[in-house]
Image (cartoon, rainbow, N blue to C red; front, side, top):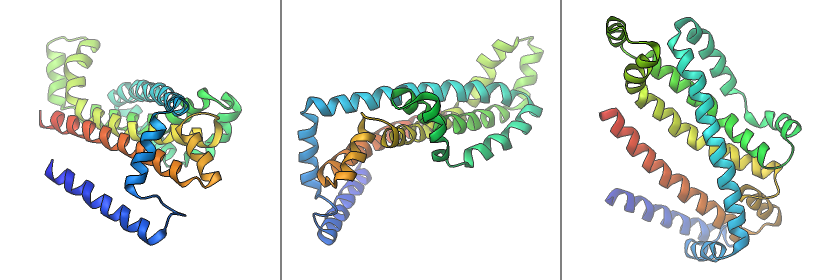
Length: 240
């Protein structure tokens, strides 16, 4: 807790210093940003943008997790399939996702489906890769024990593979969470008429520094808080 408070204090000092250096045309000071964010949270219009982003991100995250686990778990159980799929997925992950956005727009159009699809595209591959890695790292001794006990495939997955691979799988979900959020916001910035990403892009076009800083602060606070929670759970799973 003390280290966290010191980090926050240090960031606030750096932020204030950058404001003093760059001026009001580039940044707003911390106190003014927090106050303006409070004003935005008191308006119904801002909550509509926030709810839109929340819906898109929530659905995209569920899709990322479902597709990633649906690919990674069964493929990881088959050594040949894993050896073939892993380099293919890694290569696909290296492709800049923004080049796929025109295709996403052609398929889904401008609106909520496109944002969901673009968010899921960002998160699904790392979740799949971590799930594959987790399954492949399950001790062969455990698998042989399951066979000797005549456990079926479903029982082996439930009682042997899943608990052993869960720490690695959760790490993939933690990373997929962050990437899905980024993808959803990018989708809103370039192909939407509602949401925090759209609000941020509009503010950039209008050079509305208070809105830019307030929305950015809100996103940073949310991402940081969730990262702390997910990282804490991740560490407990690995210790357990």
